[in-house]
Image (cartoon, rainbow, N blue to C red; front, side, top):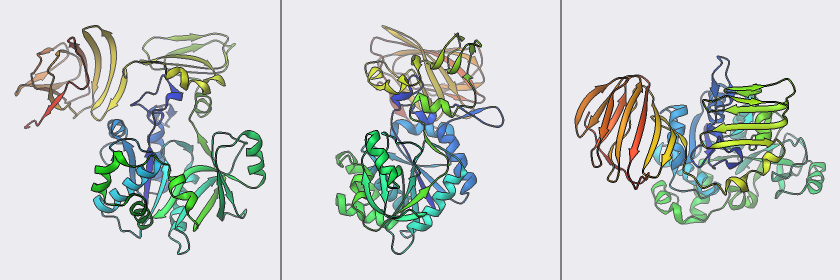
Amino acid sequence: MNIILLSGGSGKRLWPLSNDIRSKQFIKIFKREDGTYESMVQRIYRQIRKAVPGATVTIATSKTQVSAIRNQLGDGVNICVEPCRRDTFPAIALAAAYLRDVKGVALEEPAVVCPVDPYVDEEYFEAIARLGALASAEDVNLALIGIEPTYPSEKYGYIIPREQGATSAVEAFKEKPDKDLAREYIAKGALWNGGVFGFQLQYICEKTQELTGFSAYEDLLQQYESLTKISFDYAVAEKEERIQAMRFQGKWKDLGTWNTLTEAMDEQTLGQALCNETCENLHVINELNVPIVCMGMKNAVVAASAEGILVSDKEQSSYIKPYVDQIDQQVMFAEKSWGSFQVVDVEEASMTIKITLNPGHGMNYHSHERRDEVWTILSGRGKTVVDGMEQPVHPGDVITIEAGCRHTIIAETELKIIEVQLGREISVHDKKKYKLDR
């Protein structure tokens, strides 16, 4: 079967660990058995591989997230890249066309779409496998998973089933209600809409043709920016008559706020942090190379990264977004397919960046017209290519690159570099790529 993971959003509610490139699903806070940490996308990908080993996984995402996905999952995962963000129906339509036209998946094969960031256990993926089978039934066009509610939430839409069995036809969909209305829905057996949909590929391709006038992958790519921004629920699910809901009663959490995210953490602190004995229900996540000391703090979260520092009551942390929207600064940390970078200092005519290159990886061969660069090798081994001239590099080496020079650096081992950019017009758009003959 085919599983399509939807990876989107900027995750501003988890600032300062998230930004426009690094969404919440890439934050490494879940402790593995070996003591290392994994992110939401790594966790869910590992769980799929264990629970549904034969599944083909495709991640539908925006261009800004491709590098982080490659960094965390490697080059083996299928990625369907959206040219821009257009909500869930265009994303699912493009992914379905990608499976059919690029990967050669047969139209009668089932596919299940789910978000990339729920906190679940293996039982969830066993349910996904059953959903794929349900979607292949003759009298079903669309199947979905409804989450058994644990409280009257105002954050989720609700599915009203006709019966209270394990599966049921859908009576209606309800938008996010207030608490009183949510209680009424739950009393009627309503389920949270977890954004999980199962269908045969042919069904979505036909719906795409019906709603957009075309369904070929290349056509969708070319016309993607002009497609209507609309959710899959509005465009398809709420209009479908042959639809079944499967009730799911296992572990499921949406870790969209600091309050819910810290509930899933195994440890009170991550990174350099000290808390005295009077602290209660406190979580600290520190990505900086300086210690944080907390004393007497209760029901709070402290998070520190290159983007900034958050100190908040846990309940109040849910209301962070409008404040973060007021912050206007460039991205200070990002994972790339070749490694990662962190901005260390920004001046009027210079920028200093610490770069980590993964073994065997390198930057694009490129040039800048309006800035010079100076690279200082901190650790590791590799080689540089500057205007076609190749030379090995070791700790302590300094490489000067003038504006207009074509250049790259390739790591043999993990390579750490300090890059100083010098110029009055430093911009991410000042970059021209070239083919490197190797």
